[in-house]
Length: 122
Image (cartoon, rainbow, N blue to C red; front, side):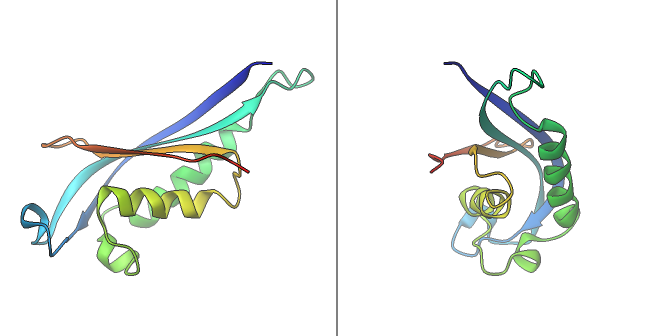
């Protein structure tokens, strides 16, 4: 048996403030990149291991919600760190994509940091 990992990626601009982080304690923005990955098995009838077009559209819709906005305003219950934003994306997508196994999120501008969140689907 062979597993397939299918990914969708998007970039977007959004701001945040992390008061207890000296580097991020004032309002500012980043160019963010996010990649989400699902695991699937090849369907011999369709020749596909998943609905990549749908995953891409779902990620695009999620990104459009925060494009040009502040995570502090859009997701006030989440600490807007890389980890917090990554978990917010994971929590939003898992109900529709239970085979989601990874969310990677990072900044494209310096200091170009990223966070990889991995999960084991049930």
